Length: 113
Length: 110
Image (cartoon, rainbow over all chains, first blue to last red; front, side, top):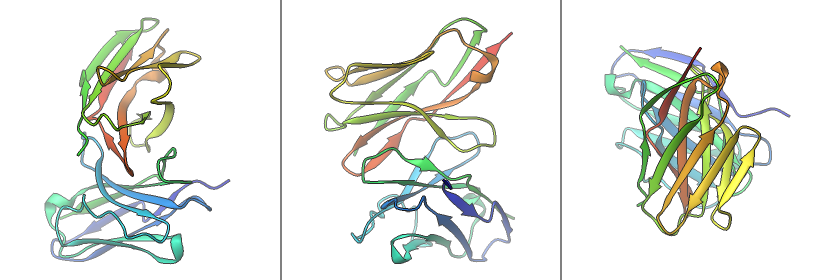
């Protein structure tokens, strides 16, 4: 079956603009995660959705970052007033249940000029 | 919260040799420990995982060991091949989210 998909695969934007990144999890997966990976670095947790529960936003680096998950499926990560330090690959992952194996999407490479 | 340390940050081995990557974690409540392999420009992919009720798990050339008392776990790759070259991430799960190590860049040389 289809894996986790993300769009766009690449996004170049100017400093100060807003961007939206999309994640389509594996069908039936109730948990969805967003991570950020800077060049040559590890995976930084951003936010986690589980079913209809309130999301765990503890990893969001600033109030410029927000995410929503509508209908328990697709998720959108929004970065407002982008800064150059926001440049990174943004990875989405999903799992069937909380704590299960996470499957990653291909990521969105964000470049802020 | 959970803190995961991973060593070494880089590792170079000759083809056919073994590679060992070690991780320690801080939260004794962690109960799930996956390992991911990330090739250049690709997404992280799960290669093996272990749960806290098991001490060792093996899948062909890769194995993972877990020492709950010492709070450390290791990835062992035997008979390394050039296609094993990648960045490997360990992770530990306590409550709802995974905390990842900083990664090990493995280079298998001919």
